[in-house]
Length: 167
Image 1 (tube, helix red, strand yellow):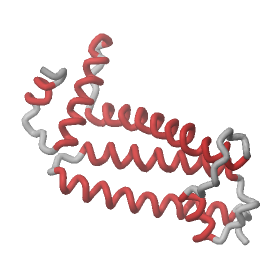
Image 2 (cartoon, one colour; image 1 turned 30 degrees about the horizontal axis):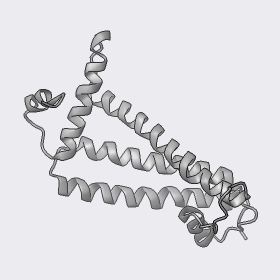
Image 3 (cartoon, helix red, strand yellow; image 1 turned 90 degrees about the vertical axis):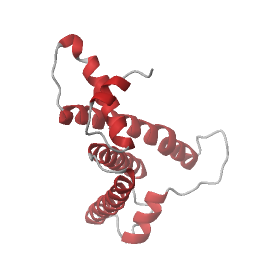
Image 4 (cartoon, helix red, strand yellow; image 1 turned 135 degrees about the vertical axis):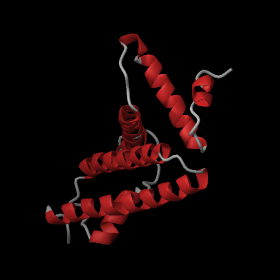
């Protein structure tokens, strides 16, 4: 029997697949803090999940994807590949008419990794907290994802224009 199944089965209001995942997460977090006799609410458990997801996603995005791009761009990579532009930078340059030569690429990569980690972890936690069927969870998650991507990258683009990186 899978660890936490009895805990999930005892919760009568659990509907949907992601709600079961969140209930399992809640069980693991609560069982971790049992030794300290700390009572944790669903909000606190979801905040811990958000922080852990944020850190993991940021590290994966920046260390494995963005740094690889920087190594190729700076010529420090042993493999001589054609430089493939990152979608975030192409979008910002095209939408806000930024000069690529002036842009602080390293800072933009860190900021875009932070934005991506924020978006993915926030949408994941919000969708897990909603106790409705999976189809509606996917629709709500998709709407949140698209709206957050558009709004946060618009804010980043306006900030870069304000700093003087525009043409």
